[in-house]
Image: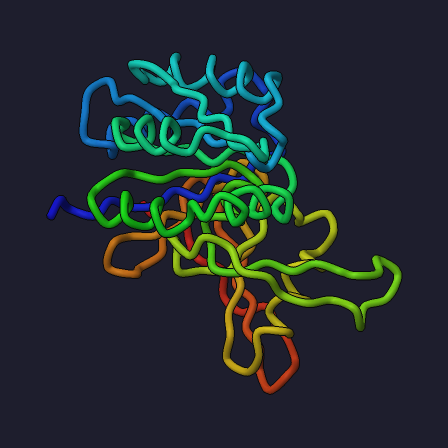
Length: 234
């Protein structure tokens, strides 16, 4: 069995700024295990929008990727045999941003998460941006009625990273993350990754922050409190 690689959960927010993502993307390329890794791109969170792909493709190529293969999955008739074959041939898989629930809807429709978990267990590196990072975690929150807090509920994500996290939501005071942690129950935790920040989930289950400290929220008998942030890895 190949060595399991870390999972990189990147917050967007400032990623369109020229060069903003380059240092972390270069680290991801290095962690993939090849000088110029091949990347599989999953854009279910944005409906396989070509603008999202073109934008991140330029960044990934500049960071040292050999090639980026867009895997088209936001389609009821997606060719899953071809998709799995393509994903089996890459060194790393990138989960793009957009809408978390929509992204998971397509993955669930195609029953793809177990296959992706198998790739992860066999040494493929996973990394995400914004909604893609949340999808790599265990669960996320949705509202049946956006104006009714009591309608909030959790839904399952990929579970490749052993965390529940939110990205670049510091201006909203992490409201959605706090709701998720409350629903998760006593002693549960949630991690807020600020704009431009990164959480790295190691194969041993350990977590570290890059670029900026990550906020840590804990459910203390039903009351969600912010505790000490995860400091930046020196």
